[in-house]
Amino acid sequence: MYWVQMSTICSNYCTRDKQLELCGRPRQALSIPILFQVAAYIVNIDVILSHPDLWKYISIPIVAGLVGWSTNWLAVKLMFVPLEFKGYKPFFLGWQGVIPSKAEKMAKVIVDKGLQSLATVSEVYNQIDRSALSEQIVKMMDPRIEEYVDDLMNQDNAALWEKVPDAFKRRIYENVRKQMPIITDKMLEDIGDKIDDMFDLEDMVVSILTKNKELLNRIFLEAGKAEFKFIVSSGMYFGAAFGLLQMALWIFTQNWWILPLFGLIVGYATNAIALKIIFKPLHPVHFGPYTIQGLFLKRQSEVARVLCRITTEEVITINNILYSMLTGPKSERTKRLIQTQVRKAIDETTSWGSLGIGTPITRAFIGTQSYIDLKAQAAELALNTAESELMHNKAFSEGQSEIIFELLRSRMEELSTEEFQDVIRPAFQEDEWKLIILGALLGLAAGFAQLFGMFGGIM
Image 1 (cartoon, rainbow, N blue to C red):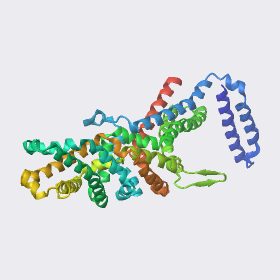
Image 2: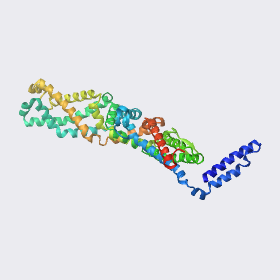
Image 3: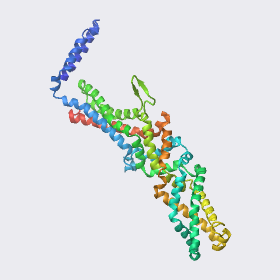
Image 4: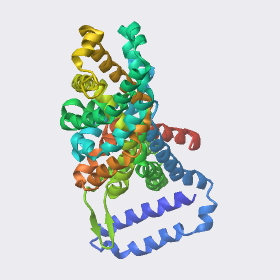
């Protein structure tokens, strides 16, 4: 009855206002009394609280807020899960998280828009403490030198090696041990001079992140943690605001389509608005004491630290770089360099002054072809050992990630606003229309549920 009376007052106001206009009298003459009458009904708390449909009307903004929150929460979830496609692919029935489904593309974006704009491969390699890395390699090889030498000699010369006096063997072991730091230092120096020809950063990053989609998700989730939280919580606030407008309209005109229409609008708008204001405005806009800027862009320093920390601890590690150099698309050049250094080391190990015999005598002692085979086998053993150790032994990266982290972090903090937003913007932008449309459809469904569940259906 309360809402009918209010509608009648407003209707009477409009009718009398038109009559005054036809008589040539000012429209304001009765405006103020009418407004006071409306206001009196609005503040009539007893009438409002006693209205039989009060809680139905109050439910409208509450439901709209819940719709906004739930659709935004679901939108964020569907950006990252499931990691693999779930459903029936031939008919496109199913879903895969937006980020995992675009893993290769996202990884390339991280390289193109982020890493390569921060530092070159040569710069990263030159920041590494090579002496510490060399010490680690020598430390890894030292306990195995005797095993490796014995394995090499026994492959083709087992009978002959068995007859070599133990004292002579010990001199060989000791000489190889002395040569190891020199060989390692020279090898690392040669790699530094030619690393651009031996290492493909994009291939390494894409390979790691496409195989480990959970890590790819974590990069975006942790870098955009505050923004994703805002997207979810803002859905409730924006949804409730739209719900108040919806309630006011429903009071005066209870057309059945209002609830479904506003449900659709709430589901669509809460997603769209939240996604926009994360990156807009691009540059700070000042309103008196307040400064408005895209939420993600305001946190550039914090995001740079988080993003670079994960990247340097999980992706751009010394282990991964060296392993990629041995297995990636440019690995042949790396292998040739190692083989050259190992062969030189064998020649030096069997030269005058090292063992007291010369290379020609050594060749005569074990045979020319066997000597050539020995060098080839030694190089192959070195490569296999390096691949195995780099895959399982994380000690190479100890202490090195912090150096790379500081380099990348300082560079990322210096990026312009336009460059910085490109680092993570693709995660939000890629297929975001699907998430917005999904939110709209869920809002539409919630509107129909509210119409039939609370207001008795189409009237």
